[in-house]
Length: 96
Image (cartoon, rainbow, N blue to C red):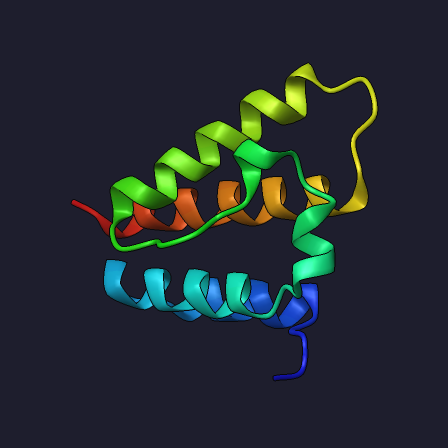
């Protein structure tokens, strides 16, 4: 699978019209990360199964805590943080 550009990810999130569609984007996004990239994330920030909106929010919160606490923030942590914040926000926009 070719890695989605940030623009493609944003387009897919904006185009997601249901929580299930957002979760599908999240799964696709996480699946495109290879093990070497994931290994550069803190151990508590390596997403595994994302099954629900609550999982998306949990990861968004986890990345936010790590991002705010880190003196040095890797590119990978920045990308995951930004992505999960956007995904969680999209879910909040969709849910009544």
